[in-house]
Length: 573
Image 1 (cartoon, rainbow, N blue to C red):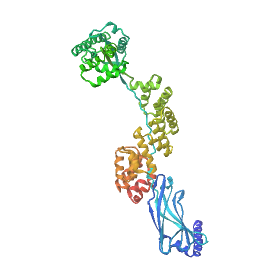
Image 2 (tube, helix red, strand yellow):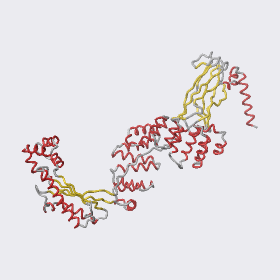
Image 3 (cartoon, rainbow, N blue to C red):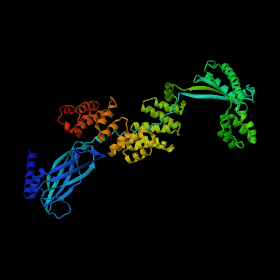
Image 4 (tube, rainbow, N blue to C red):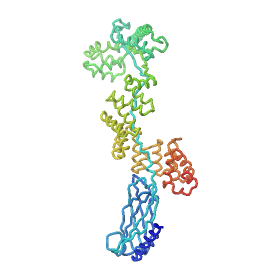
């Protein structure tokens, strides 16, 4: 009763004041006749602001000729309000520099914006006016609601920028070739003992012997390539290269048998190739030599393809040919022996065990691979930190410390790691990752600069730029950056760009998911495309997966027109 008495007293005082103000009283009484066109309605937030345009139209004989009106759009919400900039209007007989509203009627258009905050999600836009005539006190005109606010769908963007992991180059099976060369005397094909005692051939034999005793090495096959130098008759050279292949094969077969190499006698284990005139080898040796007239001889090789013409032209360069006979041709009379092996690395189980119990036994590639074997981020971080300490110049380990730190929400730790990686080498991957840190910290300008300088780093950069463009309100650019790869943010960009159906299609490609925001965004897209079934079914799923979605949906202006829908009301109650 006390409150009611106070209100009646207040109204009584106001009535006395108004009765003494003549035209002011009439303006207050007729305020409902003022028309407001609001765009957008409901209000929306884009790029962090709420911007609105209000056209206010005053009817004929409303605006007192001596009145000064201060109009202030105000966004009111639970716990507070935010005022837009005020506009001062004046009647025809006021001597001032404000916009004049005629006694016959008139209008003014206001455009303004204020920073968005989450409390504005459920709010009302009202226009407060105060009327003053001459020197008398300004009299307030009660605020009139002109729009609801605020659609905040752009704020649903998932600000989870993608960092890039630097991969390992681990190979469990690493091919290797053991090789040695046997040289022959001119026009001969027998294997000399002196050749078999060469350090090169003895080392070749030792490697094969070791491989037969090492379970981590598998001998896969052998190959012999035999050659004749390109001087002399072709028929003779064909015979020589064949005989040299045979003699080398005879030696290698005996050696493999003596060392108990499994499968040496199986068909296909040993392959042979004979080259009668080794012009390719001749060219290679000439290019590496210091022989006089080297360039002239190489020109002959490029000008003539006929072997006989080549040989004749080269022999005509008599002084150089004497050097060729002693320094080049003897090295072309040869057989090359090759043994192909596979080096077999640790199994996944062994690598995982070593990474925990004896990580010092692993190579850098094995350590990086070990981190990829686990889904436990704490374990990944331990392995990457160990690797970074053991190999302080290994950029991949340091970068990956940052990658896992960012995934765990440790933005400061991620930044420190990426800065260390940058000090080693400022790659595009590192630039993207530092941009991801800046974006996570809300520094859009720095993030955009880093991303645009790192475009070659891959799709993650474009995705991150898509997030920035949503935050900047450039939805067309965001759609282009996200491309055709489905994601929540890609669907959001499409919806904000005016394509609700494309949004639904993109989110549908994500399949069944536990991500409540995906279903919520589908419901919003359904509301924008007037598809009640999509709204109800997806909003129900969103709330089932995250009960907090219920309170958000109650406030969300995207669903204003569903306030009377029984199914909708049943879900949000």
